[in-house]
Length: 309
Ligand SMILES: NCc1[nH]cc(CCC(=O)O)c1CC(=O)O
Image 1: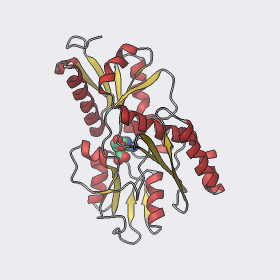
Image 2 (image 1 turned 180 degrees about the vertical axis):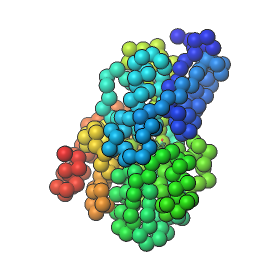
Image 3 (image 1 turned 90 degrees about the vertical axis):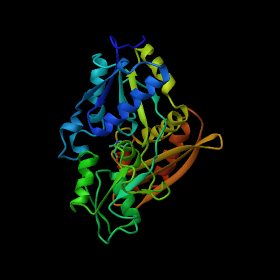
């Protein structure tokens, strides 16, 4: 298949500003890689159920799968040819019909703190808006006096809730802010202080396994070093238990010819953190699983039950 203005490649995306920016990046990468003209690629924005329900915690309305379900349906119904996701929002265990065929080069993986110059500089008892059990647990591990409360809505909404004083501060992925042109907002928190979520900063392009001709079009935009690191992080997450909404962080990076995977699991109140690292080879899920087992083995029964049910 060679997409053209009369038969464009249809890119499904959520319609939030961040998702649209990521879909535009994907479109630009494909056009540049293939030398297609602008009209050969069409963006198809869709509302996910996660976008429709903004006032309840994510875990309560069905968790992560909400972000991808509508796009998966559209892929199966051939309304779109490919779908663009934040890899962070893609479940580790998926239906066999789908395949992440490519990932764009990873952006800044760090968190950005908005509302204070550093975590140490937050006022005593500060109220931090985050709906992420990982960010809440990591903050409390560093600063047990901090209070966290759920904050939903898109990036602009969350920033306005800090500006209005509803929250003292919030944490957002640097990658998301950068993609929205908000690079000057907030201060970066180094991964050594706050390890990011598995897949953070990475954009995945999804297609149907039964359409290899579409996957072939994606190959030239795939960034293999990103792909291999994100896969190691996801293997760790999967080994811990595919559907958990528990505090987990995992980041892999190439170091001296090998993938070094760092990970941690925490109790939700930040009172316990188990962390470790392991060297992995490409496509290896045994080493990430070994690290998961190692962290669970040293964890207290209270922490372990977050993962083993
Ligand atoms: N769960 C929401 C989500 N999914 C991906 C990103 C940011 C972009 C990325 O990590 O690639 C965000 C917002 C955030 O965590 O601040």
